[in-house]
Image (cartoon, rainbow, N blue to C red):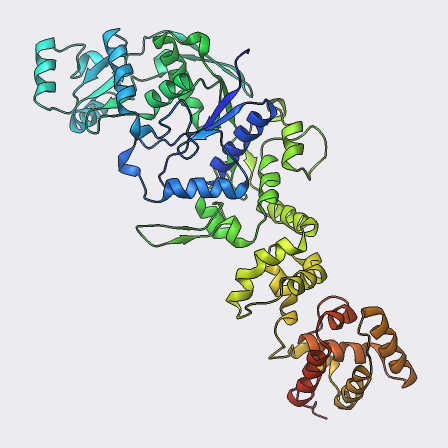
Length: 509
């Protein structure tokens, strides 16, 4: 293909963008970048009944958070606009009329009740060459009657006239050549007079053609509509500029069979949306990857490997790596299990590589939610460096290192029982004196002085150090003890030891 690569992501503003749609957007982005092409964001809002306020803005914000940028779109502009389908009514009407004038489409007046009656009378009913002659449409009605009904404001639809016994060939970059007999394709509705808007089938074909789209990369769920779209391209005489179809494998449930759904995420505790979403009608809040504490680059890496592999065992890949390695030849034809635990693993790996100053900024909302405000960012970054080895998500940095920001208010009961003896308060008092005499609280220096003191007094190393940790942290957890005391102010360390001496009850004899 000599034309410049142009692809589009075309979501409907009917709610938050599902993670399956996000992967589709990602593959479009990677393919466009790999080929020096253009990526278009087109908003498919022709179904006015399903429109949800705020959904379009959510889609833009979610993809921007992931790092997916567009060359053309509602916000970006471009010479092929408008990019919101509801603003292209006049364009679609022109192409509806072309099909009608050419006898490749017809007007149908069948009411919902009449269609239901046909379904009851005719087994496996579909509106096609075998049944259209029994229905109320312009193929069997006098022109005068058709004109009168339209003039009277009677609602109608325009249906595509599918010719029977025609072999339709769909060429797909993942699935190869797919051949379908036209007898199984019904006369799909292309236009509805009720809202003067086209359906998905017509709008997409017209827009893809006019916007010079070269590749249609979309989910497997759209594969059944591909034969009809081929027929429409042929009907308009656009066969030579028909885009290359690519139907991506479905994202499947982590457990059981079937397509991944929001319910799976609710049940197993993982998000299926990039950003948190509040339903404008019910007020229900759905969690998002950003709010859960995932890094966007980890989500990109995780999603890219759902249904595709680089041809080797490489797992950690930046967006530039993905652009370099990606090919549809290595996409699976079968669905990909959504291994959300692998997504957590990816996030852990990216957290370890992330700049601590960046993580400090990301942790800020969690700190503020826990009453820690106006904390020195450098201090937060240093604390993060000590605890992030055990963190999987950004909020885990608080769970692992909360003691850097707040003195313990309680002490782990099992550690008190195991590590706090009748002699411990006296030894901790001595430790306070040792710490007060240390001018250089760097980890190595303080460790040497304290360990020498323990040895000189014949104290049990494990008992003393675990009691020390219990006083400062509130539990026997956390990074190297003297790394903790290097970062905390010495006065704070001593204050916590004193508080523990006063608070922790002496064990019963």
